[in-house]
Length: 478
Image (cartoon, one colour):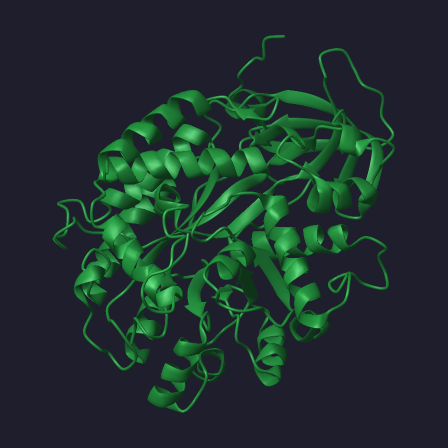
């Protein structure tokens, strides 16, 4: 059935700051849906201007409604370096010395040194297609490749940020752009090394970059922007204060305590651990996302939880790089908020990140259902609800979930898959997260547009073809 494309100006429903370009006016009927207060049956939703305009429980389907068996709210990906999808699987070999994050980083520098803006756009679009197909509907792009391969600024300081925005437009994923400020190669203002030449900028140049990126994001239908001081090893305290001020009321993301080496270096520089230093010297609050936060002591875990900030966890990347295991029981026990991200994009799936988070805790504690709670029989539900709430907060989303006024971002489970037989509600979530395969999601909607059907993004073929061509140019042919 053809859908009329409405402009909300026609019906007097435009909201300030919300574009209505090309949004379909659609209605759907969910046999079952996860709403903010729990599961509900026979939910009929109306979507106008890309947002839920009406949600009715216990409703019958009407002619023209698209019928969906099980609907879940879309997930926010709090931390992505999308360009790294192009090198996924190419660092799984051991050199003559012990392999760790720092040796992996050297290989990453070699890969990014070859990339043009066109390459960045092509690889980013591929990553975003895979995110959407897995249930991510918004991404926080922690974007630090600003200059050309020689380290020279482009004529447009936001050239590569514009390529990230173009990838979000091509795929339809929601974007919270986080331009990265990166000035130094180590704690205390150490000079950067040659591999970091594409990232490094001055405070003044970053301010110009940030302003240009803000204009780019303003051209997106519901794009958001924040700031991202890379880490305490890459910024001085004075630079950190200046960069954070540029965020205004937007998100502030920073890498913190990812590796034990980083913690040791921070102690040597300041006498404090990284998260301890941030909590002592920066106004860390609910706008902040401390990415990884892997190595927290008990005091840091409690203080970070009380601050209202989000711990941005990337369990698959943290496992892939051998970073360590996040102290979830201490942090969540203190009421801490968390979100999930795909970071290096070595693997891109919502369910896999959630499962790896729980499984890492099981290995650390030699117990089962560690993140589950006495109030819920379902560990999957605790994981999903926590990541959805924390992810939306970290990416600056004011209203999230299947709720009136929120962006209509959701996905449907393929309940016809054999593994879902005789399951409903939280049992479906647990099966998807802990026992599901790649055929578990059949549809994904972003701002009311159906971008994924039968598990496949509607532009995946063209984007994958460009991605393959890009890799042929980038990778050695030996």
